[in-house]
Every structure is written in C-alpha cells, then in structure tokens.
Length: 370
Image 1 (cartoon, helix red, strand yellow):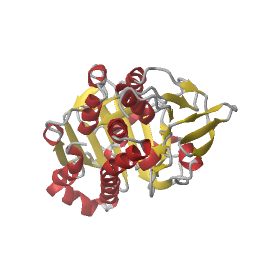
Image 2: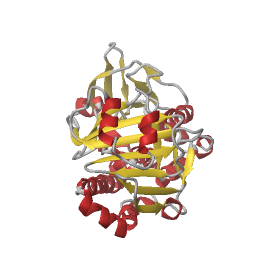
Image 3: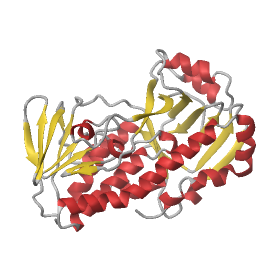
Image 4: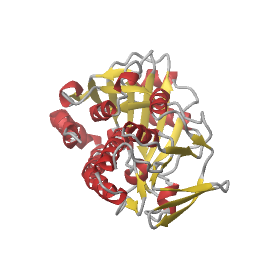
C-alpha cells in the first residue's frame, strides 16, 4: 500500500494525536478525512512540555522547523522539596543527546503547527454515533445522519474515545487518582528551568514557555475536582517555597482543573478500526509523554501502512511495534507516581542521593529509536 494508494481513511478527533496522524498520512501519500465533534476555537490554551523523543518524532513529521520559533528550549530539570530546597537535577541535554531538544511552549502554538501540517481541512461539529464493521471496511454514521464507508477508521478522540466504545474495543477510562491543575502565568517570577516542587502526595511544576510566560502544572491525589480551582491551588500550595509564592500571586482565575485518566486495552484494533494516542494508551501526564507518544504513533502508523500489503497486516505490525514503548511509559508513570506518594521524610533523602539516576531511568527506553 504505497503512497499512491486510494485508501479512504477517516481520522476521528482533531487534537494533537489526530492532527499528527493526518500529517504523517499526508506525507506518506494518503489523503485522510479528519473530523472533530467540537466547534473550532474551543482549544484551552495552557502549556505543554515536549521531551526529546517528541522532537525526534516531529523531525520525522517534518514539523521541527515550523515549531522552532515557538516556546523555549529547556536544558535542565530541577526537583525541589516543598520548602524549595534542592533534591536533584537532570541534565536534559545529556539525557536526550542525539535525540532532540526538550521544548516547552503554549499548546495553541503546537496545535496551529499541527493543523497546518495536516492540511488544515477539519470537519468540525461532526460527532460519530455508529460504527459498523464490514467485510473489507468500516461504515460510519454521524449524529447529523450523514455517514460513509471507509477502508480504515482511526480513533484519535482521546481517553474518553467514542470510537473505542462504538467499535467494542473497550469501555470508559479508569481514573488514575489525580486532580490536575493547569494555567499560564504572565508577570510571574523569573524561572529558567523545568522546576518541580514535591510535597506530601502533591506537586507543583513551573516551566518557562517563552515571552516571559510560565506554564504551571500542579497535581494532588484525589478523584473529585474542586469547584474553585484557583482557591484550591492557593490553599494546597500556600506554604510551598521556591518560586511558588510569586507564581500563586500572579495566578488569576483562569485555572483549568481535571481528573487524570488511564486507558489499558487488550487490543487497539478490531477489523478496520484502530485506536491511537490517548484513545489507546492514556496515562497520567507525570512523564509528559502524551504528545510524544501520539507523534510516535503517527510516524509508525504511516510506515506500517506503506510497508504492509493489507490494512489488516499494517494494523498488526503497528500495534506490535508500539505496545512495548507505551507499556514502558505506563509502567514508569506508575513508578514515578508511587515515588511521589512516599512520605517526604523517606523520599527526599533518597532523591538527594540518587534522584538523577532514578528520573533518567524513566526515559531509558524512549531514548532508543522508534
């Protein structure tokens, strides 16, 4: 199935995963349709941190140059205790040497680069309502009554994927047990590194994303989102040191709050239906690998479709290549979350002694090529 293939492909979901897949398919000579149930311009503008393996996948998608003007390259991760005292550091340039730069940037900037790379044509307001597995294709129906038949349906519609449910590939996601807070701060303190403060079953991350802006990400153990996330942030982290007091002072009321989801499936495809990105393998965002895994999914899927003789063979090859890396991310995410949940009196001396080795180990497999 080379680049001249007339395969009819539908990508459901125009977030990071869907647009990355559409870009990879276009580079491979395919012309996918892309649909999104939300109207345009409903993107929440927070920040994003992309580790080195994300940069490598973006090069494969030929999007590294368009992305270069945005955000800020991050050279070091600093871990502090709740009082702001150093725990350990990770040299990101050394960790990802030969792989790619680590970059933090506004999510909207990444989205615009991906949208342009995908060709820009997204059918918004199109919510899928039925999936029918056919002998050599997939029948798709939308809630407005329109529909069609495709040779391949790709569900890139996030952890609460409708495609996953309609194609009987899995049910709702499992709560990962974290409440997460995200916001972008202007006129905050000067922070040049990825800087995380680890407290008692809670953490506060600050990372510069360019033009004097800071992306703030915080989490706490729990399963219920507060009604007033700004007030909860101040209550939870009011006693923290380091840059946190100045950041809290600069935070407005525009704080996004949500609950983390985890998706673990026995299989990612059924017939001519395939799940990618968070729809297939969502984890808590502890390792900042959500976007990176979506980019890698896109690269490998396009390669698999080009190399295989049939769609079915391509989906088998794709899943066999991607499962080990996404399983590594899930397992290391759980490891790090368990480390964070250790009482500080036990955890902090451990991290001061060998935290850099512990945190570097979490990315060891991801430094290797796809």
